[in-house]
Length: 97
Image 1 (cartoon, helix red, strand yellow):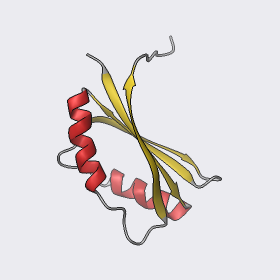
Image 2 (cartoon, one colour; image 1 turned 180 degrees about the horizontal axis):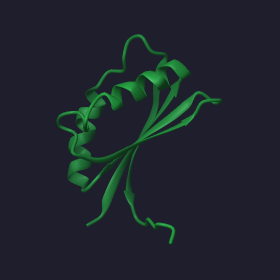
Image 3 (cartoon, rainbow, N blue to C red; image 1 turned 90 degrees about the horizontal axis):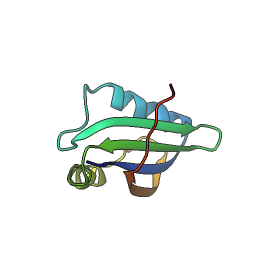
Image 4 (cartoon, rainbow, N blue to C red; image 1 turned 60 degrees about the horizontal axis):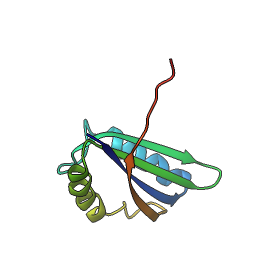
């Protein structure tokens, strides 16, 4: 069964990135209603961009989780703006030997 990822790209300053990481780290798992398998946060601090990659076990889980994630608001006290969201099928993944 294929897996899927949701990639949200944000413009964010260093304080917003640190705030986002603190929020994610303060929870034991994904938000309620988000059947995610993993979350990865990628940052280019010098460019002021970050990507949040959330992995789902099925397309249905992706759709369900995306509804919840799309409804979430960024913290008011941060300088962060969502630029784009993509939903992609994982077609190949290899681990180094």
